[in-house]
Length: 438
Ligand code: SUG
Image 1: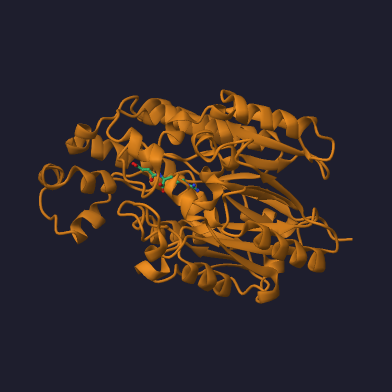
Image 2: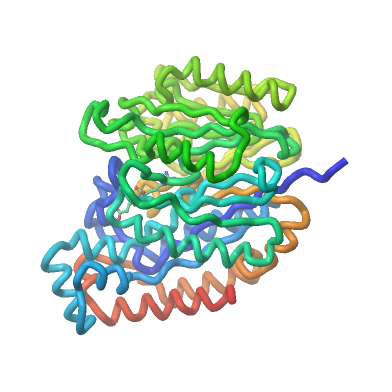
């Protein structure tokens, strides 16, 4: 009998320029926090503490170093040339939002970095990653190629792995990665069905927010991954959810192994979506999918968005039981806490334990635990080939904590973006972190 696949987590280490730019399309928390002073040091330490917890729970944990910000090349492509101090001032005077985008640490949410399929699911028998183009957001499109290069570097010694190019960066193909994709699989991890979730067409929106994932992008990502068509389902989000701040599916639905948890307002025509998915799952895997629908009367949509319950991570403690890693906002909300307590008390629910984590800096920008990680399923050989360069262990935690404590600011205001000394120090800090993985 083959060994089960391992789920590995790849988190984005939060950068020294983490701030609140108010830039996330349809993201209520990001809009509400705009131009509040941020605390990059606390943000990065919170993210690191989550990685440490996952690693202690026995999940192989990896990280991607922050990208260099401000992104001078991007500013240059927008027409800013010459003396750097001058560029910062001119860009700020023209548009603080543009400079905020150049400084953005939004790459930290690696659930948006790519969509992933393990080797056993693909025609090529390669672990395949399709980097997301993120072209719906001014500040996020610039992450795409840089993350593609980092992912290629991380996987360079893995013999059967491939990181494709992102889909072309044009609006009809807007793609936000794994945040809009769920892989339901057996406990062994090697038999699966895939659910791709996209937003309603622009002309069908009910309010101001544009859906960040297009149907065409979801279908082309499935094709790029070389998945069996019979193993794929596609579902549209409800316009109500997008308007309530559900800018990604992982704000309103989640899955782990054969467990699917979703809010009743997650998918248009949810009964049919779940029936189609369950049918394909049963046929392929030979037992029933565990679908858990959360109704609005148990948890209203706006409370789900505020507490980010569906953005919790679910991990295996052993082959039969699961643990939930939630933002602390879930503990402090009565309906959300009651729901979690009911799940844990229910012997038919595989979730048996909950951890509450403070991720307040990330949450204030609309990013919970699951936003900060990209999941991949790998076999024993691939895990070995991944090596230690990007792996989180005690020694790496200690090194990264030291760098963060010594170099990340505790307060960052929007006006600080014009300071060349700050920009240069951020760049040196990111270089130091990047060197640890060479
Ligand atoms: O794209 N926030 C991110 C949050 C991404 C969350 N990811 C997942 N749900 N998987 C976004 O909206 C805010 C940045 C700012 O406003 O400065 C931001 O980009």
